[in-house]
Length: 281
Image (tube, rainbow, N blue to C red; front, side, top):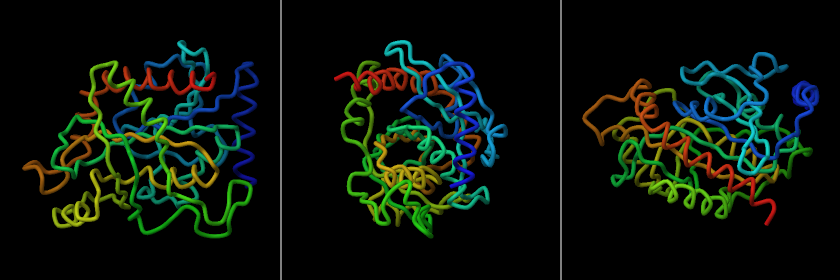
């Protein structure tokens, strides 16, 4: 808690130094989706390396910057995490959720999580977007293991409604306005960093998963522990192993994400505006 409070204090001082308003919304950008941050109106950019005890993102495509941005439609500010921390990078689960918990201490109440994922559902194609309706944790661990942090939430948090239906409707609305048809489904998380085998993908399909990845679930668990409203979307960057003739690679993930970045940026900008404007209703 001391490290979290120090990190929060550092960020707060930088925000206050510029007389900016502290946001209540955070969006975390997954692999290949960082261009959304480049197109936003940036009020303050803080490299993770300048925040005490903030873990560094080591994966290509994750710049490792915390950005305070402004949404011009609503006139409100929001946080962008341009790059996330992964369990497979060698960090503990506590470290993986450290950035999110720091921003929770700074007052965020809504969290939008994005990722690149492999499509398991045979009706999904590379380039699709999937609203995360629910998730399955197969990472073999949980960020809440250990002594409960009572400052954040209860020992046994409820996960029956992990993802906000209300925010999902706003996401569908924003996509429809841009002529985009969003899929919906269940995201399943494994530890990585290896991609799944065809046999594992068949198993995951049997378990009810529509898309698979190596992130997101720890942050969502930590967010729900603290009573944060969560919305999630997966960019289907490729078909999962055994469903495509091509071998899987991070380069393919990044290339396909780059092709979709304009669409993603357009409808996510509208979605952010709708979420921020919703406060007035």
